[in-house]
Length: 113
Image (cartoon, helix red, strand yellow):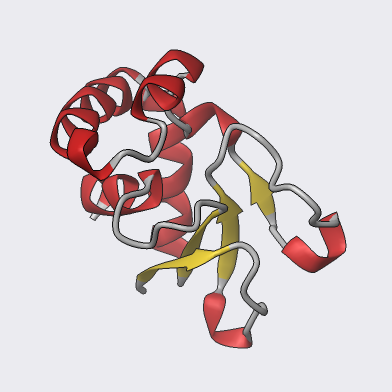
């Protein structure tokens, strides 16, 4: 059982396992069919306030991670849902951001691993 991270715009693969979109907003220009997400768990995404503050600014990444980890610790229900899927098999966390190094999926993966 593994946890992968993938941009939602990338082509789905059989090895992805259960695919969960972890963004609060639906990715622009993407149909539900192309996203091929088994679950949209928008409740686990960073709060709107935190997302807007971060604005994908790499300089804010360390502070974003710290604040987002605090939100995840309070979000027991959504975290529990993901942990249950990991127990069942492979899990792929989908995100829409262009930045593959600074996004919430990375924080979630570390948190639930």
